[in-house]
Length: 281
Image 1 (spheres, rainbow, N blue to C red):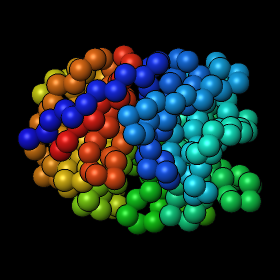
Image 2: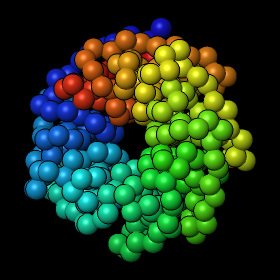
Image 3: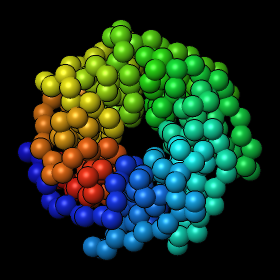
């Protein structure tokens, strides 16, 4: 049975979280315009300039630096493990991941694009209607992403060939997405109060949550062979097995957002109320 190991207070409202190449936890403080780092019991912060960009999603990039999106500021940022920050302008970037091709893939939610940033700095992109949101590599070597207002799941090949899979539930508003241990993609339906699964052939299955107003947000594959997800509305951490069995853990604080799995297999939750919570599966 899952249990809370510790709660780490941080000076702001954490949103995104990831494990860095240094083994530390790196996170965004969205309201403060700050990137944070937690390791060995200590929290460090790195202020961004300007500070009004609202850093959101953060991932480890293909170059062993941390990359993050500043949705409000319209920037894609990069921070090295020693705290050096650079950025480049974009139009409302949100989702971010490292692709199987060694490039950085991202979504521009406001502009309606999915893009690829190559190692040499060149950008290529494809237009996607309906606010493309989170993005992740799939088991088929393609990139899969949620289309929040288009009520769909998208797939893009490395050559930017696009496929859109509409969802059966209206106004499901998918957000988070992650590759599961079963080779399928798992995603959250924040509007419908459900968790979805799409196989690489495009077949969709939806699993309704006990609380329709739970507002599931992020999802990550756990070390235990299940998927873990945050419920922004209910303040809980959810777990779903690949056969659809759902359980929950009450979290301290409010508004859980991002998720990461550390090198020990523990799940970390970014609580926008001001903490990082460690959970043993």
